[in-house]
Length: 351
Image (cartoon, rainbow, N blue to C red; front, side, top):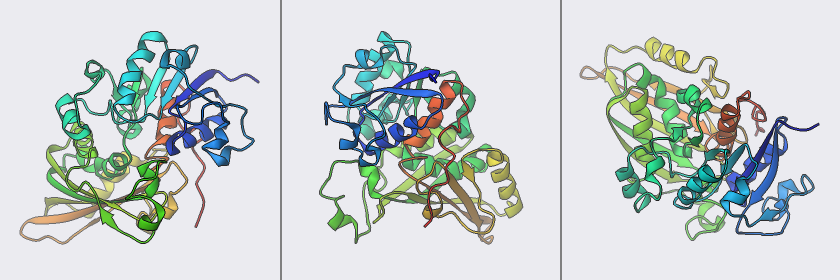
């Protein structure tokens, strides 16, 4: 039985691309036709993704963007930032395919912020205004109509989801402090001095404190949702996990704000959302979402002190799935007019 849509994946040898490919091979409506990569050319996909052994006859191809996108309904990009920005215009000019980009190249509307956090002028800044930020819980209708979707970063997804209810209710103002703990797969498939197993497995350390590239992305997203005068201080922490992000964000609210009000804001934001859960009898944890496209969010409200209360918001996601490839597939489903849950409803494993 033929499928309705055709898809290509560019930058297909990385961890995130492997998860996209796995989901597409299961997809009832989308056929994976091509996988492009400058690595493993001519080799089967299992050369980079051993879990795909025997699942497909596709091989990695070294294809120009216009060739890879020819005849496709959608192209998913697993390319590094700056590279993706040079590829996207070629796809837009040479085909009618819709694009879901998992790099950071089109997430920011502010080209100056891009230059500061990504280290150089944007290669295609004329397209920044056209790109739709792909957080379905915030911009679902706009994503459905988009030609170019900028799928969010992993930290940005986790942190923004936990703070989204406050932003929508006008309760997110001023300084926010966040600590986010992340697994090693977020560093990519290529081994680096600070990320390989002997260093990572027995260690906790921070990196890019107060200067991580997801800071302006989170601030833009939450401002769009209703936050005012927001300033995020973010400290990421490298943890001995393969997958997962756990983020804790601290917010100050007026003493008059009650736990019931916050609970109502979370319920209004996430009731009916297919991939965001607010646990009823526990707080979020990585093991509950690892291997899945689900996010867990929750909060705790402190006692009033000097007319203010401290609010801690928690979130947990799988950085490769809801923080990357799974959300990319969710966005692909939306731009193709499909049920956004397709191939994404599996709950992952436990423990």
